[in-house]
Length: 391
Image (cartoon, rainbow, N blue to C red):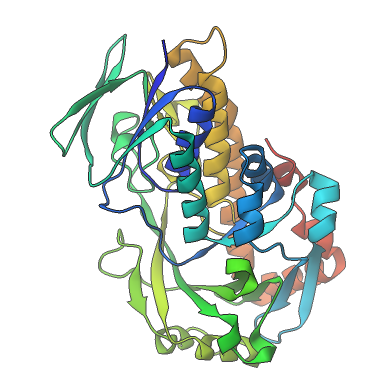
């Protein structure tokens, strides 16, 4: 009998799960609470460990058409604009890790996955439909949803993000907390920027109590810019897409160098995203319980300081599909195998991301030490072999 998978959440993680499970012959039902599949305007970095999986799913040509493949990652002082360190990407990433390093608009990656899922034809997509309750017994898991239907399947996968409803049925001790960091996000056509502000590489600007990252998307035609500062949460911290202006942001960047200030001033429309999180995963029991499993931000929300939020969700999807299709493993055992396979790697990425956030925002003596180390050991510090080689 065909194994039936129920996925809650139609973001990048949910669609990746549907695609990976469908490719292994499973029947998937995916419910999404929004009336339309959509993603907000933001960019994503896809390191070789992720690109390798996407290419293995046949999405290489789609990436070629939509993504950028920057030749270089550079780190600069946000105060002086001086180059602190750099890491060659491009051909070096392919030679060292067997896949490219890509940057892509979140909406482009989401549409690429959605198109592949629809073409595959093994997933039933149900929009404008939210899960209300889940229960399980020795034979199946069942959910009730807002469309009035009850659905039963072999397993339930919670891919519904940081504020997950499915997570309450796996663990009840996880309430996201505000990190004290605010992300200002923007995407702008490069043709509308002064030539000096356009870029084909990934650039990270490190400053006291703030940092910024910029890189090309939409085939290089647009520039994605994220500036993360320290400040109080907005009244609705669970809503991650607030309006903002360059004036709002400029108050945080008084110590920034002229090139970074000029870039911020050239962009008129910004969105504000309060960063919330959970402690790093402590064990496999936080990823699976019986016939219910969590993946992506529902299981292990990633702060954006290692650029692995989407990447870890895509790795989760591949691992779920592999575990659920392993001969001899029952449904519950398969989810246990997935949880044991993934939790340590996810926790390690969470811890490294948190640490990066502290280093990026360092001031005083710690900032001085960071900059000296970056100048001396730049490539060694920026390369992450244990991550990019895959888990």
